[in-house]
Length: 353
Image (cartoon, rainbow, N blue to C red; front, top):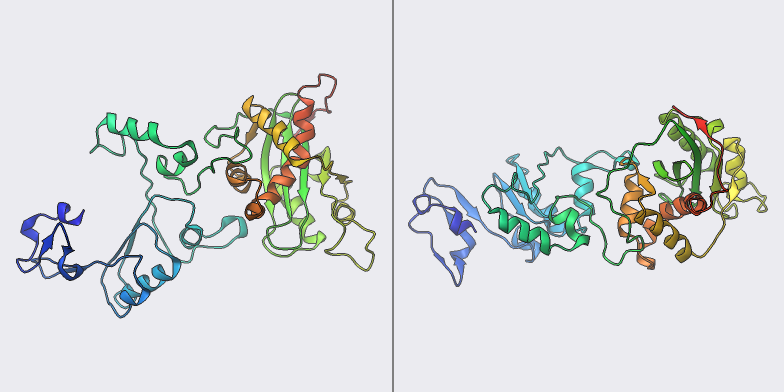
């Protein structure tokens, strides 16, 4: 690519390139005195140590330790770092470095500017419309968000919620809705989760989410859930139903193991939490898939964790970290979508906005 890009008039006469071996010594010498040194991300980290550079360009993310070593090469000169990539779902460490983790109030480690280019006629004027159309047509649905739209997150193939389409924008919810909360309990960071749902007799909206950022007590969870409700202009008194997991009180229990997590959280919220109906996961997933297929369920963009979980979760243990929001969602959402097919089931209507 660089050989095709660089005009011959820029290259020093002593610099050599062959199609077989590439650039001699992996070095490009320019006539203005600048030198470009090429290194492979697959080489040993020692291959880039001891270098000093004015400018670093990383094409596709390497392993984190390789990036760390490469970035120190411009530390002494305070040189810029440029990175070009197509996200493939393996760069979580890089995304946290660039964007931080808003769900856990973690700021970016460095200041970056991001430019997202889509595979489109507007963003790719150097390509023919036919080539763009052909590339889009040959892209797997599970890779569309990343390869075509330039999103960090994609959609796993053979995922459990195959009928959920993250590209479909939610329809606006009305002023008169029922309100529910689904809660999954856990002791570790990211394991206590809650989903705020609005629903009518024929549609469901996931409006907001809470994910613990550290090991939490029931009191801390309650404060965070109340803050989420407040951010959406409602109070705990506005909530019609709260459904929580049936865990025993492993966390926050004060010597009385007969309490459940629902009992302890109910006291802090001053609202009764009903135990979840632990139906088979496959049955709950099937019901939600049918509702997604019929466009009866909308996910608001602020529910980033839920969107990621619905887009990627499979029935495998290695996807366990994605399951906590899924569980909170299913506990409260499944009874609602089941009622869509039952004309005799309808909740009370309240004005929320």
